[in-house]
Image 1 (cartoon, helix red, strand yellow):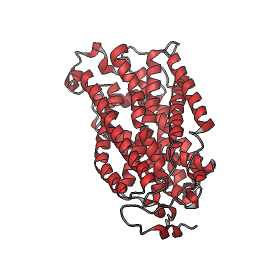
Image 2 (spheres, helix red, strand yellow):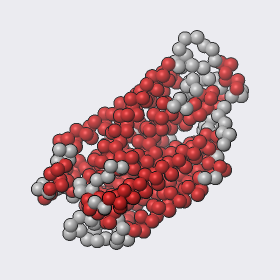
Image 3 (spheres, rainbow, N blue to C red):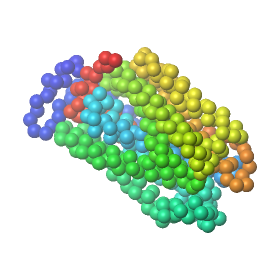
Image 4 (cartoon, rainbow, N blue to C red):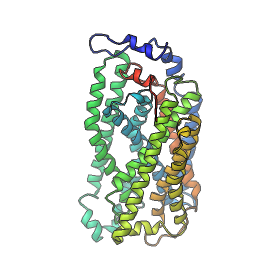
Length: 432
């Protein structure tokens, strides 16, 4: 049955979309996983448990508590960014009525559903630092800074009560958005009600505004506030750019892996990968633009509270990480993804996606880990001192995220099987 023949089902009265349940491409063997991820989910679980256990254990070795906390937090924030990127793409695909992405949207929805879970994990270190370790990583929580002039000026925002309230707001907002959009999509699988698509679009209209505000402020609270002296008006969009960059790569990796497992055959084609590749290329350029703009404005204004952040990251070996980001986060993916054939190849996008995830966590490493050595009296360690802790943390949190995502993907169809724009996705072609 061709994609064009799908339209023969159109014209149902009432509020129901085309019933494509008998389309051969939507057979259970093509759109559902056997079980909940099987052996792959268990592999991710073992990787997650081993990585997290090694990171926690590092707190009681020569690496110390501060290094272990920083490593866990950079990994948790990297994983959270991936899920928030999935939420962003779910919202924007509904808002723009993007028919081409329907066969990929369920992956985005499941990634978005994990954002509240990853927020809880990302909140472990700051809440522990607030209640137990008293500002070991987040300096504004340290009682010895209570009389600091700069902190006093920011105390209306950086105070324990308001901080915990904001974490609660982020959790509620992301839960509401992700659960609402996913439940509408799953309900449409059952009922075929085409008006659920309009409800999802309405939710995305206000959801995008809530997402933008909460994502920006979460990046202030969970990353920028580690050094209360530093501030950047571009920090929220910088974090968002990394989230979109990493999640586009993750979507491509998941879709390619499902194809290799014999799923989504004919539903996700080289045409869809072409558009995914465009998104990966676009956010490579966007992240680079924001990163350069932030650096340039801080360099030009030359305000000590801002420049000290970059000064600490251009000495004691951190300059090598800086140049790695310049090359690996922009030049390398740009020069590869600029080619049309690369964007259309699932196998090529697997390699590019793996590199993009690696460099995304290098970015988080560059943001968080210097906090271990930049405070007064800290030993000037290089980026590679006890780097096994950082590697263990990243692998551990990626294992947790991979386990949760594979389990979720097994709970529903891999595509919205009764979405009214599904015929458009099946016929999608790129002409440029």
